[in-house]
Length: 153
Length: 101
Image 1: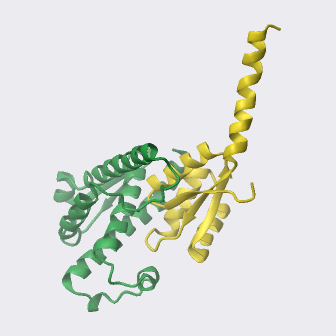
Image 2 (image 1 turned 180 degrees about the vertical axis):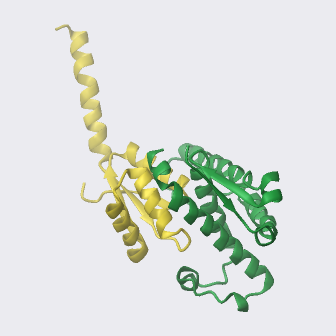
Image 3 (image 1 turned 90 degrees about the horizontal axis):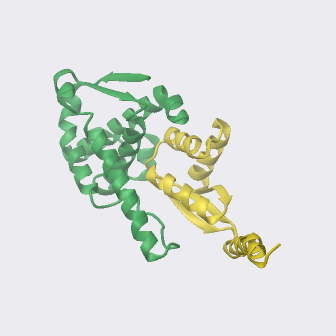
């Protein structure tokens, strides 16, 4: 089984985890993306939404499990074909919620082009933006190193 | 051929054709969002639909530049399954009737 270990900077990443955990808690009862389900009858729509929510919660739980005792002692997190898809999806969900809740004052163009001047952001916005970028970096790492395992999955 | 076997042989097929005719074809549409990475969207398209890299990239760019891309057309049940899977991957996806049918 292909596996990658990533050594993260504890002083940089650990302070982000409370905001990430808070965002996961916020996602507990809501979908990260408001979906278009109006073509479905009410019973199917409800089951559909519950299944999506269950999957999202499971993905987020598996993501948070990365930050265990090993992480807090060595700064290391591991990805393999068993957790890669869940972590990718959880990162997407948390980024979407951060964008909606914490980063809504930033224009789309600035975020998409990487044109955000962090020195001009306040403390809370800086932290949210760092979380947003950190999660994207994890996604890029997984896509770069585990894409074949995911595509064969 | 007995009457019973004739019924079991004919009725299900005509019902299926009727259902297909009533339901028509449906489109799986992915809408743009300003959050998900281009590389992520390409991976999701390859994973979900089995697209090759150029096809997945073409659909991703269509979503990015035009705001939406029709990524699959077919019967409703399968289209629903694709939409659900794309939504599990946190893409904004929806089902639309194919107006040509």
